[in-house]
Image (cartoon, rainbow, N blue to C red; front, top):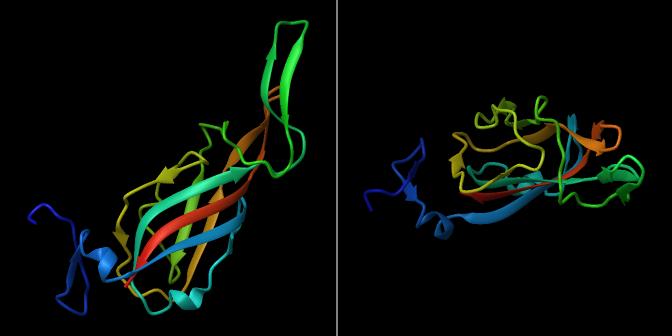
Length: 173
């Protein structure tokens, strides 16, 4: 196919395109969890499964959760009557209010070097699909931090860190 995307490997002339990639690799979903305050997220996978393999990142998704009890994520008033929706701690956020001027910074390091497609401010509930980014070296280490805030209380515009789950679909070669 002349329009297919080719993935080349430095130590050989081997090429894969998007049609053969699933057949010549191992598909995995890597998951992390933790707060959105810039600290290292905890991986929910074994790094040994990735060591010594090339990684092709297919997708990347952040799923935010309210960090504390009694978040106000719906608030309306007519000056007399106040109606608000209170969300409990640990609830997944379907209707996300984050801070546009701040944004969310994602720092992924593979072998201590930053993955260069995370060089922008994203919304906290980012969902990147069909990336097909191949890291040029074999994986030895991988780490992830996310720094972003949500509006915790719409009534008084309080911002806070969120709890997160991050899922990343990858192919290992």
